Length: 294
Ligand SMILES: O=C(O)CCC(=O)C(=O)O
Image (cartoon, rainbow, N blue to C red):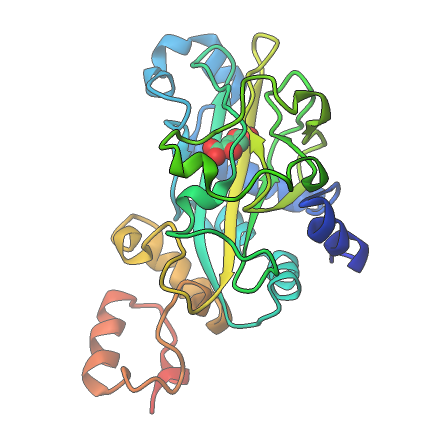
């Protein structure tokens, strides 16, 4: 679904927007079949949680970085997500600065988090209040999420604008300066069917929450965007992922524009010469390099 201007206005003023039906059912089903090659299905997991001790290490141990497989990879640069990022960030020169696939299973670990703002580990400084040079973070739900499924909870900006940016970080407390329970009465849970999109600003207080029933699970793909340029913002260094299985296949299948989102050298960049073309072709044997030839 292409986002309406009203969605982007809500993102701007409330600090987040929850969009049901962002993905088609077919897109969800294809992504889930790739995902369950990576993670156990709920049925597999709950048949023997002791077989999957890796999910018990920490609440973040269910996070996998790309590449996953095309039908899942493509959700990180879904045309309607890129379109929303372009419109919200006011630029078509975008950088996809983080992608994570996150599986959570009830009972594996304590998933509760304090309220925090994501800019703490997405920038070296603080976001500008006029929005210049800002970032956009997203969760695409890949399972149905109810109140029992550990939904993300967010605080509309109007309840937190009075809390100066950076106080929690200056105090050296990650990631929260709010007392437990503070603002709990105004938290909004991100519930919805698989295929729902959450977009939020990095200056919005939010938190992960615990499952409240057994045998529940939650799966989501997180993809974050910023306009290319500032050296003080980001999260994942793509070259550090580029030797992973599936990476070459993803880059080969991606369009010129999609490769650009990862920072791949552009058409016309002086990087390209006969030697680099030959080397890149060896590294990505199925990549059509013709557009890059000087
Ligand atoms: O998983 C979630 O629902 C939120 C996680 C989160 O906010 C974080 O880890 O920073």
